[in-house]
Length: 90
Image: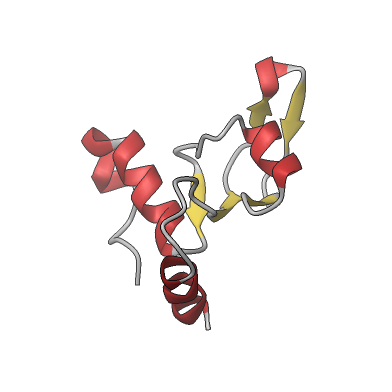
């Protein structure tokens, strides 16, 4: 089902903004200048503008990608740490 959702997003149009989903794992993650903290287990969905705003459009290294877009964004943000990111999107 997740794979189908990724295909649907790609087929829906050539949007420039990436709608990605990920879950914070391990430690919490500071948001928007460090004033707030997203605890471990928090899920972000960039199709929700509030989530994207809180995360400042970024994906942390201590996140678990929940779709292919999040995996690609994480790999692009941390290419030298691929060994920490797992085996890729599956």
